[in-house]
Image (cartoon, rainbow, N blue to C red; front, side):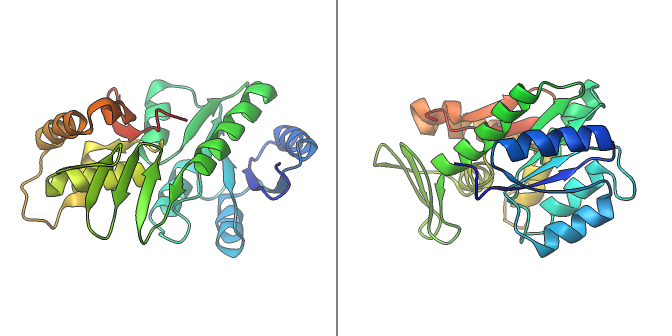
Length: 232
């Protein structure tokens, strides 16, 4: 099942790196590894990876900065990242999720739990049928990116410009946490005056219009919002 999944491990502690390589290869993942942020970036730009396991405190470009670089490059921004680090303070976890990590695992960690989290990332991406050109589909929700039509259980719902843009952003990057500022930056350029309070207000309206699927949009306390397919 995992034979075609390429994972990059970015970890500067050799013992941990070797442990990860051994266990992931045992589960038939294809593994590359490095201890260095610059080398990781070079590998990512040269080869297609399905997942990155990323330590934060690494030589050169640290894990936070590397994540920012990846998420700002449209050609590689969709690669999911699981941060694997000894930095377990709330502010570090919030920071990691806010800048685009799909998950955050603190050391010491359980290999079996990490494998389950990796499997969940791949299952989520398999369940999601997405076309960048046409539509985003999550079971009962369909978003037509060309016509800007949104359907819940095949029934059309009307969204404002801002509501649609928020839904498009969140649903295009399932489980990624976006701060209010990031959402504002994504939307700006329209004729709308967008503030933090406006975003909260729009989220309330969007959830109401989505009806039972409003639960897909989750509040991450103290950070912002993310989209999770409630049916998978």
